[in-house]
Image (cartoon, rainbow, N blue to C red):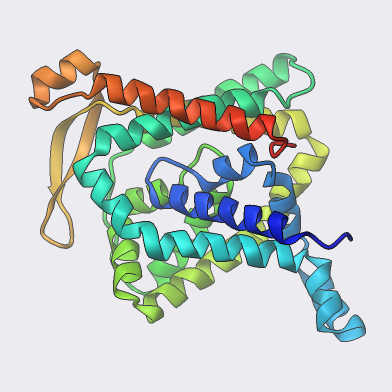
Amino acid sequence: MEKPSKRELFLLYLKGVAMGAADIVPGVSGGTIAFITGIYQTLVGSIGAIGPKTVQTLFRGGPVAAWHSFNGNFLFVLMAGILTSVFTLSKLISYLLTEQAVLLWSFFFGLILISAVHVGRHITEWRVPEVLTLAGGALLAFGITTIAPTEIALNPITLFLSGSIAICAMVLPGISGSFILLLLGMYAHIIGAVKALDVVSLGIFASGCLVGLLLFTRLLSWLLTQFHNLTLALLTGFMIGSLNKVWPWKQTLSTRINSHGEAVPMDQANVLPDQFLMVTGQDPHLVYSLFLMAAAIALVLVVERLGGSKS
């Protein structure tokens, strides 16, 4: 395997930073970023390579051989970028979600929209099964975005299980792990643990993520190998369906009190920009929002043109 240059490692680190920033936002998947930056299948394959054979390689060939058997350098640099975002941008993202939600959602709406087109272009043949799979994925993702958040008890078991479930969504383009945490009522707990550097809670959550990741990526890697077009059609559908969640202009129909005693939206409906102004009294920032959507689309096209978007 050819040793990557410092420039390639730095670009990989930046891709990890982008993935981490996306994973913080409920409704946006780090898997989407991985796909449009051309590292998705390498990511899935590298994680899926970790297993019993890794242990065998460790005893037979030593730590270096075991490390290279699952593309350790790639995963290490990418994870460093993801963790950099999680620990440095969580406060900024939380602030933007509260103070500039319309503009933030506008950027991610454009990002996911062009990403769906991007992934769909990698399907080599469109037949009835691919069309039906795309439609099914879109309906499934749309249905998930309409589920009202709940709140489950906070304990080590629920932390572990939440990590196992959320990490599967984080790997899939279009399905947001942060949104799954929001549905489970665990999002505020995890963001709070990150801000407070609660190593115990984060350790339990990370353990759940690790178990879920090792199991799920093996399945996903097999699907991409055996049913490439159908799997990509499903992922494209996931992205299309998730657009319902990231639509920038929303009317809050009902709220709930979270575990911190704060009123947070529970049931929301998508509205047009002019309706948003009437029902909320807030500026829809239409011009800025459209500009950010266009900027997100242009960003993906530039990344693709630079050659970083190989499937």
